[in-house]
Image 1 (cartoon, one colour):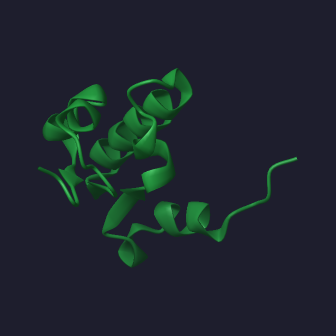
Image 2: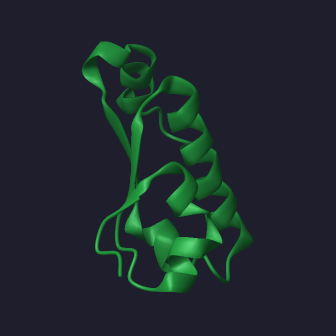
Length: 80
């Protein structure tokens, strides 16, 4: 069973949140792992829908940046 994260309630109360971050663990294997790519894309869509800034941590390669269309929906930290 998945633990309940308090971050979910913070997202609902947007006055406390101004950005969502995609963890580097998902970014690391985003090119080769469809689940990581789907999670990243879902976070980007959620951020857009809520009007939040989305940041991808640990983007080091152009392939990673392009895999989830980071250019279209979020900022990439450590990006080329």
